[in-house]
Structures are given as C-alpha cells and as structure tokens.
Image 1 (cartoon, one colour):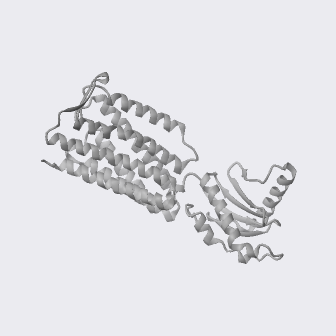
Image 2 (image 1 turned 180 degrees about the vertical axis):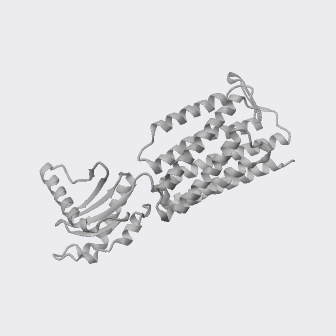
Image 3 (image 1 turned 90 degrees about the horizontal axis):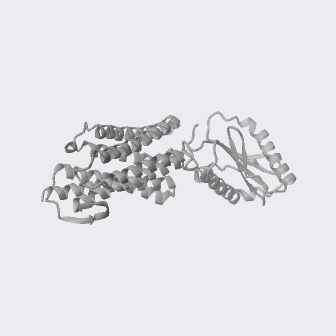
Length: 365
C-alpha cells in the first residue's frame, strides 16, 4: 500500500482541525456558551471534508475499487473513492450555515436574512453542480470547481470581515488575542486565494497546512478568551443596584470615564420612573427602557424593593439571564443588610458577584 506525502499531510491537517473542534467542544461543555458549539461543529465539518478527501485520494493511489453506486435517474456511477470524495464535498454545505450561525450569535441578536439567502444560493449551486453526471473524485467539471471556489471565498471573507471588526472593537486587554484570530483568518484567506487562482498546486499540500494552522489560531483564542465572543453584539456600560428610596447600593462600570457623581441622580430617577409606571399603568413592573443610543434592562426584587439596572447598547438573552442571576445572588449574599432601617452602602461590595454572573463581558477600563 502506498501512502504518499499528499495523503499524509491531508490526514495530519484533518487531525489538527479535529483538535481545534475538540478544544471548542470541551470549552462549550464546560462553559455552556452557545457560540462555542457553532464554532466547534463548523470546524468538525471542515475536518471531515479533509478526512474524506484524504481517504478518497488514498484509495485512488492504491487502485480504485469497482463501482459501488449506480443511480440511473441521476446517471451516477461512482466508485468508493468517488463516493467518499463527494461525501466530503457535500459536508462543506452545512459548515457554511454553521459559520453564519456562529458569526450572528457573536455579532447580532438574530440571524441575518441576507447572509442566509446568499448561503442558500451557494448551497443550491454546490448541490446542482455536484450532481452533474460524469464526474469523479479527481475529475469534476469546471462548474463544480467554480461553485467550490465561490463557496470557499464567501466562507473565508465572512471570517475575515468579522474577525477584523472584532479586532477593531476589542479593548486593549483583549487586543492581542483578537489579533491572533485575525492572523488565522488572513492565513486561511491566503490559502483560499492560492487555491482559487490555482497558484497553489495540489501536490504542494500548502493548502491543507494553511487551513490547519489557521483553524488552530482561530479556535484557541475564542475558546480560552471567551470575552471575544461578546464584543460586537452589545456593550454593557454599567450596573447599578437601587433601593426603594432611590439610594444606590452598589454600582459597577465596564467602561472607562463613567461619572460616578451622576449615580445618585440616576438612581433617584430610576426609582421614581419604576414607581410611577407601576402605580399609574397597573401593568406590572418595568422590564426594559429603550433610548436612542442605549437600553436599560431592569430586574426588580419585590421582597426587599430592590431595583437592578443594567445599561447596555443592545439587549440579549444572555444579558437578561445574567442580570437575573446577579439579582438572585445579590439578595442571597446581602439580605441581612437589606432588612434594617439603616442602610450602610459600604456593606454591598458585589464586585465578585459581577465577575461570576457576567464573566463574558469585556472590561473597557
């Protein structure tokens, strides 16, 4: 049996990408951040594409097997190598949608229809061209090649665009990690350019090496510096805890330059707004206030008449859940100081709770 250098590099590169998949999956299982699951599954698809391609090439180089798939309606007549090659080819289709899910989960609060529409058109093109009769694992039509090229360029341009946006928006303490992700995307873009323009001959195996190294440079920072996942969808500026008299019990700011002197005025205003709306409308407690350039998420504890206010640029489920968790933990830790007639604000040091309940928020100080 012959194991050529091309096949060996294909197997090794698939192994590297599987390592990237495993890292992201393990971090998802530990932290529960959904973007990490999309990231892991996306690279799993790429790894399987490389693995099936390498196995198909290995079979071809060691004497192909007889035809095993004959499907007259589509005039398919594939050998085992052809079947494995096209399985890898079609696996790339869901990876495109997984990438869109991942990018939209870290940049938006919903899936963008435009990207999904373009992705659907590319997927349809891949399916139609891939099922054209007379093709084999190493003998595809020029239309199938063009469809693959369009897929690959769209895939990597998405990576490059959003990693560049994250790099520009990253606070200084996360800049080097976002730079590593950006470099990984640039490396894969270089691979895509060389492959699409055919400047990189298949026998050089440079393509698979670039893909594997780029994958690791993208996955490792995202997996171990998870604050990178929450830079673009929103920016939380401050968190304030207020009692029913409008006194600020605790405040925390994620953005440098927040004026602490305005907290008393802000606290009194929020307490008054919540009380007026609750009494006049009789429609329950205020949950959210939307301004032109900011939103206020509000959580109220009726037992101790405590209001928790999170100021952010955009709301999301993760922020709402984190604020609810913080309110529960705050009451649990400081309830003995909330029931008395005299409130000593120095007792409410909840900085540790902020780190525990909002671990995904980057600090811009």
